Length: 261
Ligand code: ARG
Image 1 (cartoon, rainbow, N blue to C red):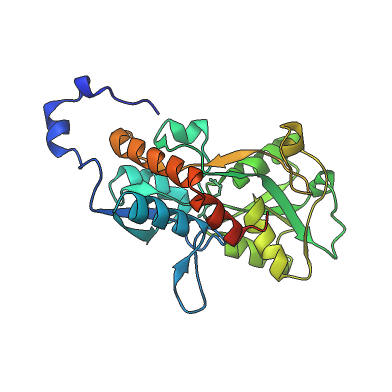
Image 2 (image 1 turned 45 degrees about the vertical axis):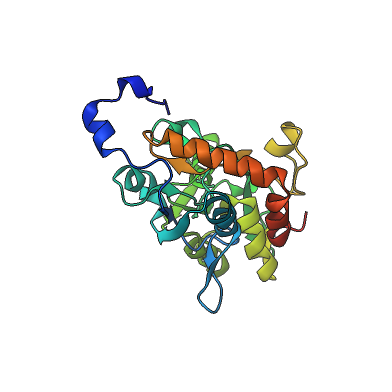
């Protein structure tokens, strides 16, 4: 989005402006989205985003943080309605969203990927024509599936689920033939299941010259922390903290806890 220059901010806006760095930051997030935000078997919230929040907010900025579970499909209106201060939810930075929020610098690269049942006859993108594909509502995975739908002249059905575990369950049950979703989240699920595998092939990541995962990638995306458009001073402080943890090894430590690379 566009930043409002401070010299055009009206008096009322100045009067009601939130402090630049609050003492407590409430973070909207759709949970579970493993390995980014999920509960351990003992009910403790954990994940890559949670550890990054700990490092950025508590350790760098001295701010308490708290995750507030929120439906992903309405998470941006919810931010703009004031239900929480920021969004950290493995959220991809894109132009549509950037019209409604401001994003931090990117903190993670992801790809849309397709998982299927290993014992199914689907092994390529083209095999998806005429099938039912599961996605999470309001996600870039849903957008990628819609693109496939138009490539196949509408000859693919989409089942949209409120949360990703329901899409995964539908894939196991045979209610959908594939799920299109972020690579590391699909990989986490596939690693726990004998009968789930990726559609292989090259794709967007290879085209972009990226150190690509060994399966078909439909997009290249970057995650960012989302802020309201009137919160640019806080955003700047968060970008500085992100840069610090990328430079001092903290980011890499967190990364290697969740991803073997
Ligand atoms: N990266 C995808 C997107 O931004 C999916 C994010 C879903 N996140 C979640 N916590 N459920 O659309």
